[in-house]
Image (cartoon, rainbow, N blue to C red; front, side, top):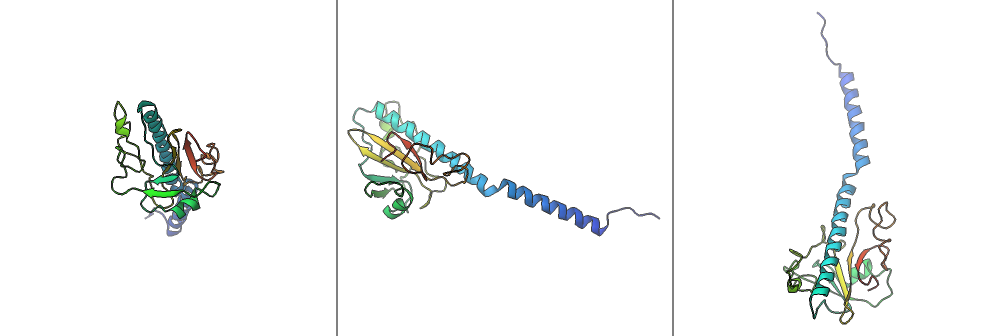
Length: 194
């Protein structure tokens, strides 16, 4: 009688080959970096949406109120002036800014959100359902907003990129090529030197 099947050695060789291939795939794809890239794409989209909403507000409202000059507005409760200085002001020569954050109403579009603008005051209503917050939203990754107030109504919105792809010197560098004063922060707005 002739029995056919796999020997133990053949099975071990196949298992070893599969293990090597799966390690190679994980190292090549790097799921942690792919998730960080997805969050960075969301950050770029959110900042663009905020910039458009603020510009729309400034063109539509006759007496706009866009916040206090020389104040950092952030969506994270843990943000402090020192953490802001460590992340955002490394490449700046301006005076230290005051940090202010919001609590449970951080996403409000009626002026009580982390950006102190009443988007509901736009004649057609708020273009935002809520003010976006960073996908991670902790003391390192958060959105911030700075303005010089009236009468010039200039502003800057900042986000810190997380992935090596979108960070400074990455293959899709968004931080050092945005025209802002910081080479390690993604900046958008009407005055990238605030």
